[in-house]
Image (cartoon, rainbow, N blue to C red; front, top):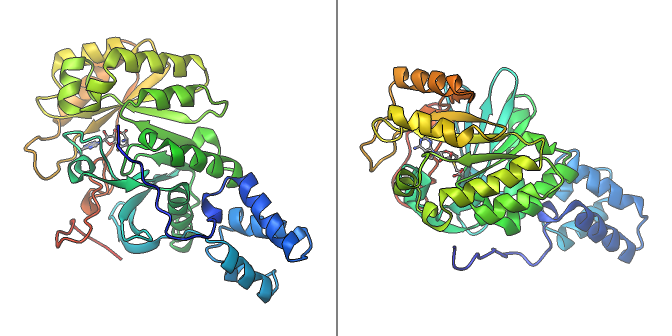
Length: 368
Ligand code: SAH
């Protein structure tokens, strides 16, 4: 467990971006009532916030100037500063966001012909220390607030609109951090996205390394958020070599929680499985993996290992990836190879590692 989840509070004003929709609505209503303003003003603000994604009260041009100023005094609107935007040759775009206290986090926009997926961070750094992950190696900094999670969506969506991309169709919590280790911000952020911005729960995926209480909580929710599980190994021995959390929540316990999620119905689980040459891609592991996954309404995403500094591991060979897909398929398990995106800007799975103050810079090609 993380010792002290510190929530930053650098501003005394309530942050409208991080409040639940009903809280934001009530706060703005009370604000206008106290100022003797008509009640419909609250509706105007809420529409600016959610429908138009306003970044500031100054943008809310159908409100009187004096009311915009009063709002800005009473409320904050979290809008992290884009410290850098890098754009890959394949259209993938990575934002480096500087938070109010100087922490840096990353989000990634991933276009495909039919989708625009936004990958968001849930923590600055990560405490899980998975051996194959660059964020894990960089260590843990702090929890994000709900406002800082939602602000990545607001900022990336506006950038996408301004840069000729379509609207964001999917959100995945696969950026920096372990979302289920930050429940205090994750669950409100999910509600804000779903009920405030009307982003369908089925288009939001929470990816976890296997935080059992968080999975159980998701299973028991009525909204059908999608779950991705970073399995990466089909047995306890191998998994604990890759993922320290395996010691706290061993595979049998994790699978029990997943059964509960699966039985809640309507929510297909994604199993993520990193393919590391000679480590996770041995032929016998394919059969073990099929045996583990088979009972679930699920599919497997095989992620070719993205090399990171500090390890000499290599991604599996193409032939082995294809062989795994075929072998799993023969046992009734659907598997896909997840194509690596944004490799040239270090935006691919497991490569996110915001370099704070040191002189180290990630590779940058085509950065804006
Ligand atoms: N903490 C969450 C989200 C993390 S990142 C989780 O563990 O699921 C999203 C995915 O990238 C995870 O499946 C993670 O295990 C994977 N990943 C991490 N490092 C990787 C690497 N070097 N190559 C390929 N995938 C990696």
